Length: 140
Image (cartoon, rainbow, N blue to C red; front, side, top):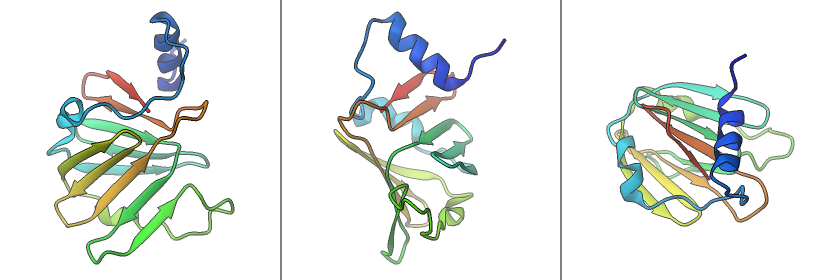
């Protein structure tokens, strides 16, 4: 029986003895593999937004801000009724041109001038995962 990425992340955490489920984002130098990745698909789930790039995969279970090229900011995953418009499809076909990291915020800049701010926190639960092309997992 195959295991999901979620189950693999939990197993890896247990294997290496790390009992803290929540992590800040790693240093930007460890996420440079995202540069040049093109967004090919967006998955919307009840509790998660998935971004499928040609060289990476990002699962976001926490808060997310999309700032379009005009400067309009839309925050997602914080509206308990999920009524806010999601306009992430504007990012399809765009490549990542910028990766900025603060301990609990990852900002991705795109070729069209849009940006995504992905948030993490110090709570007991993880806010998402980043998978590189080889399947290595970064939990945040």
